[in-house]
Length: 496
Image (tube, rainbow, N blue to C red; front, side, top):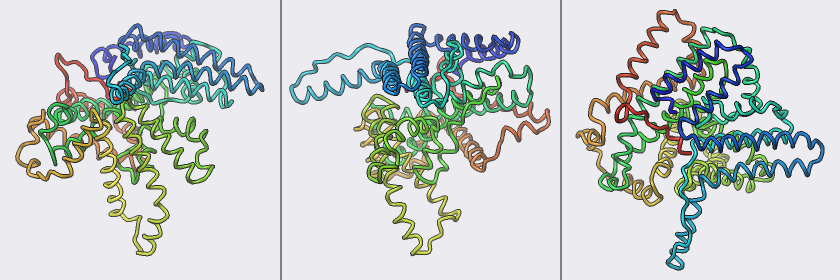
């Protein structure tokens, strides 16, 4: 089930209504049933993978806790639990990638392709709920949390529908505690519900008005059979719009998830914080997909040694983390290259930091001015956008062709002669997209300044709140992008 579908517009109010009607102590059971129904609307058979992941990590955590001081046994159980759930992820997500890569090697060496790809469908959200379950097992092993004894409560932690299929990747210490106290949530809290609804509304705006509209232009220019007919500034516009698209698509999902959980009194972590206002690549990853960045930091980077074993080892650890982050995003070499590019940019930024600071001091160059900050943000956005081309392309070859064409073809007139209106969006739709993006940028600027927009909204008069809600719903209904027969478009990160 997609958030931006008519099914969800029926599902969510029903879930909320029953949630507040039934006895408080049965709320978590109702949410568990609703979460499994939410997932089964996509594929009934694959719910067994969700059940299997839940069962393995639930039992694994119990055995780890019972092992107490037997360190070797604890490590063995933790390793077996990790291998079990990562094997599921590896088979369904990476088996065909490995087979295809090996076949290419054999084809080059011997002219044969000895391995046959398996016909499997990537389970929706498997990368997210596997990492969430694995993080729970590791936290129990580290004794950061106690193992959950109630299997139904643990199952709800893994399957909680707002963040099941595309995160954020929550920690048990935060989310499970809230779900275990779900019976304490007041029946009616107007401010809480208003904040949640407004957050959801903004998420729908980002997804349906901006992301889905931008995707029309992006898909046209990046089409594997047609992209060679474009060049120069057309590629640049498509690249910028894809940067906007993937942000609004993923952040839009996150806002809907945060808002829907908030209505029920559950606080989900922020997964984005104005990433395109970042000053450098490190700052970008502190603001983009925050839950994944923190997961890799706590469960991979620190165990590898972090920065404790010298500068060279630190840079190797950073590069490994970014390579695996790229592979996490997709089973293809262009995703791995995307991760490597970010790793290189991150390392280069840290390695040259001291030298750059000395140069600035020698030249008496002020780094805290508005102009300097604006330049840093622009440079960071350009670097991130160039890397997004590798991410969005169907292959490394296509990415190289597009970047080469963007840098070697000079055709600025396409920005003014109407050519932009021939890539799936007419003039009206393109203008709606630009105005919507400008509004989104304004919101990001306000959020960057730490302003709590939902709290400011909750403090307004009732008539103003209703006006905002009605205007927002009407705007999304009129300017939202819909598929054939008003079908909802899938969120980008569902494929990861």
